[in-house]
Length: 394
Image (cartoon, rainbow, N blue to C red; front, side, top):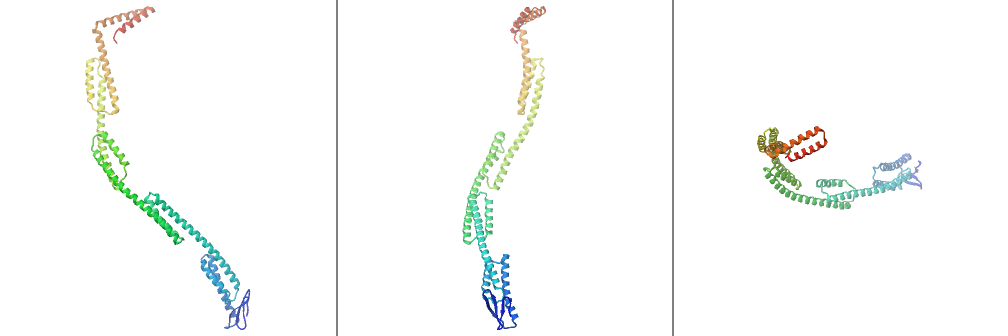
C-alpha cells in the first residue's frame, strides 16, 4: 500500500518519503495496510494542526514570542524522527519561517521595551526635576504640596523601569519632597512668629483707636484715625480669625467717632443755615435804612451791626458774600453822612460861603458869555469858573 508521501511494505514497515529518500517511521501489524497508512497520515495532520495554531496565534499577536519559539523549535526537532506520513519538508519550511518571524518580533519587542524604558525613565526624571524646582523655589505652599502628592500617583502609573534605576530616581524625588517639607515648615514657623508680632502691633493700634473714639477734637482726631488706618493696612496680618476680630473692633471704634462727628456736623450745619437766613435779614434791613437823617441812619446801622455780630457761624462758602453785602450797606450810610457833613461845613464857614458866592457870580458871567456868542469871553469865563470850583472842597 502506498501514497504520495509514504507506503507500507508487505512485512508491515511504514515509510515516509522525504527529499533525501525514504525513512522508516514505524510498522503496522494491526490490520489492512490502508488503515495503517491512514493512521500515520493522521499523525502528520496532528503535527500540521499544531503548526497552524502556532502560526495563527503569533500572527494575531496573542502568542508570546518566547513561548512560540520554544514550541516551534520542539516541533521542528521532532520532524527528523517524527512517526508520521506527510509533507514533512513543508512543515519544516513553515516552522523555519515562523521561527524567523519570531526572531524578528523578539528583536522588535526588545527595541520597543528599551524605548519604553527610556521614555519611562525620561518621564520620571522630568517628575524629579519638577519636584526639585518646587523644593527650591515654590512659595504657593498648598498648590505645591498638592502637586507633589499628584506626582506620586503619576510615578506609580509609570512602568517598565528596572528596579535599580527606579530606586535611584525615587531617592532623588523623596529628597526633593523632604526639602520642600522642611522649607514649608520653616516658612510657617516664621509666619506664626510674624503673626504674633502683628497681633501685638494691631492690638496697640486698636487701643489707640478706642481711646480716640470718644474725642471731640474733630479735625485732629479725624487725621489721627486716618493715619491709624494707613498704618493698619501697611502692618503685617495676624492669624485670620484674630485679624478679623481685631479689624471688626478697630472699624467699630472709627465708626463710633465719625458717627458722632457727623451728628454734630449735621446739627451745626442746620444751625449755620438758620444763622445765614438771620444775617441775610439783617443785611436787607441795613440796605433799607432811611438816609434822610444821617444821625438816625448811623444809629440804626450800629444797631444792625451789633445784631449781625451776635449771630453765630454761617456756612463757610457764604461768609465772604455776607460780609461784602454788609460792607456795601455800611458804605451807603457812610457816604450819606459824609455828604451831610460837607454841606454843614460849608454853611458854617464864612470863607467857604464867600467862595461859593464868587463861584455863583462866575457861573452867571459864563452864562451871559455863552448868550453873547463871544468865544473869547466864553473861554475866559470857563477858566474863571474852573478856578473857583477848584478852591471849594469836594
